[in-house]
Length: 438
Image 1 (cartoon, rainbow, N blue to C red):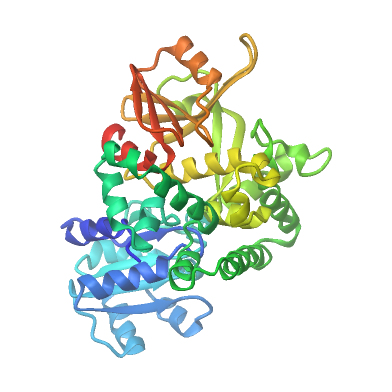
Image 2 (image 1 turned 135 degrees about the vertical axis):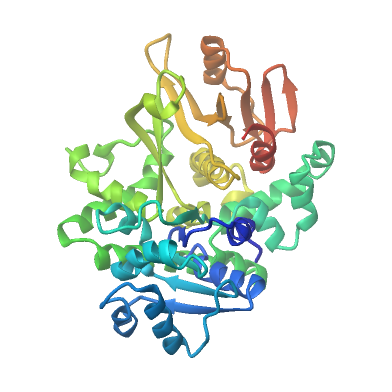
């Protein structure tokens, strides 16, 4: 399955000033496959080392961090010659050996001729936990679940992907029903590589749901394996409350939905941990849409999961629910799925913009715009609609108040430009953002 991020790995390989590369991303987003595939395609050979519960490998880094000695011992471990610039060295689950993580600094300073790529499912926690870390001595790339465009290509719809990339809105109008059908399947399958692979190979939706349930169970096992006992229930409570929070019309995260009397301070670590391992995205509220957006963020926020397929599995949506717009469960939850999809697509654009949302209840009534995007020098309001219903009072209110240069309404309606307001089909959103605004 082709991943668009591989082009960034190629750029890293060609960079004369490259540093060891850290590949960040949640568990089971395909980091190991990507590193090995990159090694197969673009190097004469690669050597793979996994630090997960590997004491013999840890011992290589215990004495000193001399790069030449480490290379010699890695050659013994792999029974392969490691040739500068020709052999890709892969360190997987590197956060399990802090000394190996620190060694990247010395490879950067003393042996830059060796090409090293590292990854770990808890790497985000290791980087931000205060442990020794080679600040300024590594390059980083984030890997997300597969985007809708990657899903189309993986399932053999390369031409549809190309039409989206080329922004052929005349063709998209003709193909809209086909793309809507593909979008429904993406809402069900999502972008986790194992689920997508099963969809390609079998098309068995029950098997896909089992894979997704297993992934969710593995995440919860990580809670008990890697978190101190007092914090495990809090992390689990936040994680399980996300579908309920998104099902509300106002999707702002409310602590009392976790349990009566809950307070923000009690769950600070839970959010920290879930964010750092890439399982959730927090989108903060902004009342004053000035540059830079991050300086105007409020404490209020919305929380989304890393993958729409996992969200669908968490709430038990079936493909029949998604196919029937009148299904009660889908009717209550399709707004949440739409916002989840939009956020996921924005995260996987070439340069993901700063993302917030706007809400203001100090004027006449309560107004809320689903997302605000800081793209270069523009702040762009984006309203996400789950069908072809284009009523967007809050977006109109925002445009009246702040007069943005451009505003976006994304839905199942066809592309249309109304002065500064753009209607963009949901399935075409990421391609448009990539090539026009960022």
